[in-house]
Amino acid sequence: MSMRTPLGSARGLGSAKTGLDHWWAQRLTALALVPLAVWFVVALVGHIGADHASVRAWIGAPVNAGLFILLIVATFHHAQLGLQVVIEDYVHSEALKLAALILVKGLAIVLGLAGVLAVLSIAFGGA
Image (cartoon, rainbow, N blue to C red; front, side, top):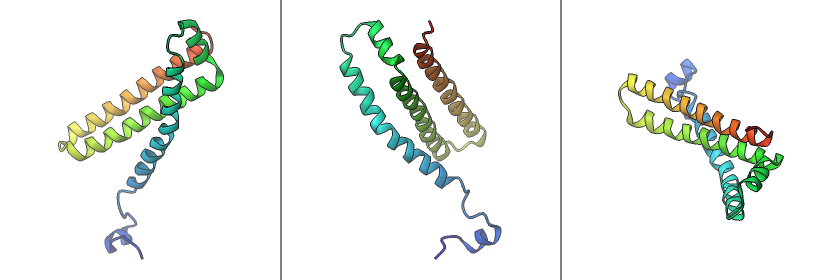
């Protein structure tokens, strides 16, 4: 049994065709964030009282740097997806909605890239 309307079937459009992908992406990033957040909190608790050099060395280890990058990317992508839903649902002016969506996506990209570059800088011995 199809859930499409007759008009949607005739046009081949159905829904906007992006809702399911968006929903899955949000659920998968949330699922990825659970173990990554647990790892991050446990790691922070384990480094209470550690000096700056030992924490830098720990972050610079390949596995930890990779997990930090995954955490950063998943966090900003998940946040962007969630804010997109809120903006689409509650901002009714099309111009303001478009501006807000562009701003949120741009901030997620810039801040995520800054975080990834910071981890890479630590991992590869930068300043």
